[in-house]
Amino acid sequence: MSSQELERATVEPTATVDIEALLGDRLLARDDHLNAPGVVVRPDEVQSTLATLRDEAGFDYCACVTAQEYEDRFETIYHLRSYADPTREVSVVVPTPRADPVSESAAPVYRTADWHEREAYDLVGIEYEDHPDLRRILLPETWQGHPLGLEYDQETSQVVTLSEHENPIAGDVHDEESDTMFLNIGPHHPSTHGVLHVKTVLDGETVVDVDPDVGYIHRCEEQMCQQGTYRHQIMPYPDRWDWVSAGLLNEWAYARAAEDLADLEVPEYAQVVRTMGGELSRLASHFIALGTYALDVFGEFTAIFQYAIRDRELVLELLEDLTGSRMMFNYLRLGGVAWDLPEPREEFFAKARDVLDGLPAKIDEYHDLLVTNEVFQARCVDTGVLEPDVAKQYGCTGPVARGSGIDYDLRRDDPYGYYPELEWDVVTEDRGDNYSRVLVRMREIEESAKIVEQCLDVLEEWPEDDRTIQSNVPRTLKPAADAEIYRAVEAAKGELGIYIRSDGTDTPARFKIRSPCFSNLSALPEIVRGEYVPDLIAAIGSLDTIMGEVDR
Image 1 (cartoon, rainbow, N blue to C red):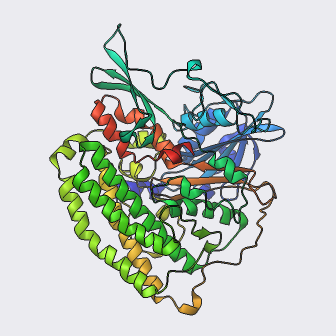
Image 2 (cartoon, helix red, strand yellow):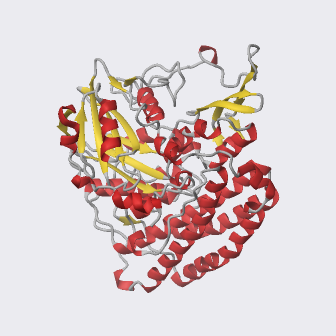
Image 3 (cartoon, one colour):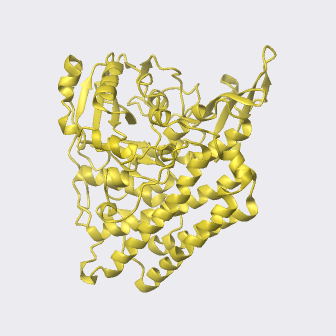
């Protein structure tokens, strides 16, 4: 039994943990969510409560932080899980008065809360004492008001001039008192994979510290989802979060949360189709990650990048056949999928199997051109090391976490879809460096291909008169008032989670997106300290960050 399996086997299930006895008089009330016990604590007891739940109950993973405003209070919710068993969940609810929305920061207990609480402060207006760096994260420092607050005027425009805050495109600054230099990387740079601004402090050529500056394309996705109806208007939005071919996985995150919230069943046949489509999306996403990483590390445009685009194109053709679109799929529906496989089915099956049959030889090509390349190894082996305990502190998931040996995958550990019926393996690497994260994605391509092939076998044999693609869903969905849920799926970059609070209407009262890229990127300073500038570029690429999902 591996160390990860041993750890998983020795953790108590949530049902055996007496949370009330554990917290004692710190517990003010219970506020259970649909999939997790909830506890209400005082704003000055946050750190002691979270430390107790982490150290004595095994909740070592802060998955998400949600902030919201009610008519009578502000509220912060810390969604805690266990890396060893993500079905062990608890929600820590921290109310604060509207007149004085101040709470203890969770950052001293979970480092990932640093960025999450900055977002809560930025958009909602809650302040967190003892926070290491409480400032806006998505909006400029001079922005007036908090856009998700009840009193914020959404119609009022603002003009924020560069002269009022630090110029993000200022020239390089040399500190005459020392050997350090301040260097701007981005925000528009091909190796930052989007509009990411990395403020870098150098000592000679060595990275002393970096400050990832996000928010340049803040897209109001949560606000738009809060204005859309559950049944018809929200589903097109998830495709736009991680737009690099991962749309079906994004849609599944919303579908899973909304279906559990509204108690909707999904036919088994539709689950198989979802699983196949989701893994095709993962394949396409990983191909583009490999191809662009070759560009980042040694400028290889002619072979590896072109091969990756070629192979991604083959997968996109299958997704286009299935969904009718190449990027913004809008294929999932609450309770199932929009339509069945394309006709004639035999042609679709033959085309898909042809793509899968060609993958082993192509994976060998990637090994020859990329993995065994001496320049690639020199740039990636033992650089950008992310230790597993640090990865857990920052809430890292997906290939970033599995590249550090963390055996965590929601497809297996919090089962959904048709995954429990299939044979496949969770891929991990133990070195935690840039090289390991690439190897994880390459091996996951093989595992995704195995899953797709098994789904094709099942779909081919499925009786024609039993192909139910969607359950009977009411035309207008109105979940019960004040129901709350956090649900997540294993997206291409990691855990993509959705928190929804309903108010009895057909639109959510609060819709929060937990982006895996947001938490993964927050760990960048830990990865690159002591490295050289080229290693910083390699580390950014190894995280496979999509800024549209970070900024949302």
